[in-house]
Length: 234
Ligand SMILES: [Zn+2]
Image 1 (cartoon, helix red, strand yellow):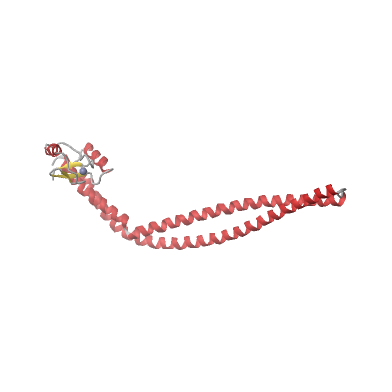
Image 2 (cartoon, rainbow, N blue to C red):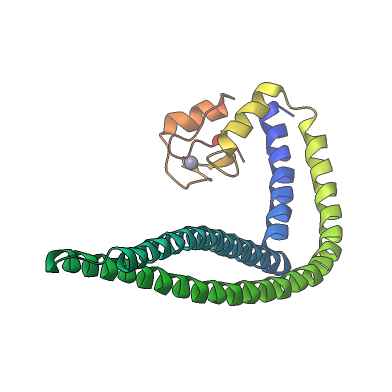
């Protein structure tokens, strides 16, 4: 058997093994597992997001506490000034009142923000709890299904292993150049070899110039000019 026909035999085994691998990947159990896994990853991402939001809130609360302390001090020193050195004229009184109002407004705004953050934080806590519950449920489902899948996979993995062994055996007599070519074509066209029917490529069904079939018949290595598959006579 020439290299091209050995490669054709190899391809048959390769296609079988790939089909089995694809069917393992398509298994409904596996797809469900993947869905649970993605869902779990989503929950983990939400958890991280919430955690970082909570951390930001804690930082902001610290800053607000400082701002409140400072404003309190400003108000107190204004009060002390009022006691010790009351405004002497209406201009000074106006200035005093305007300062007092400004400090009080600041204080109110800070306290309002603190209340808002505390409420947000308790919302986050509830969200965190919900996410944890959802993730735990999904994890339990995932684990249950994983047992089923592992059992199912054990059988299929054995079959796949057997098919891959055939592939390896058929690869033995093939020269490295041919194998390299096969693998290169396989990256864009599967399967990489196509039979030539008359002047038509069996891979993509495009008609080829008659010179092509003459070359193939003469034993030359020719690739289909449309799909790039290596052509072989049936
Ligand atoms: Zn083609």
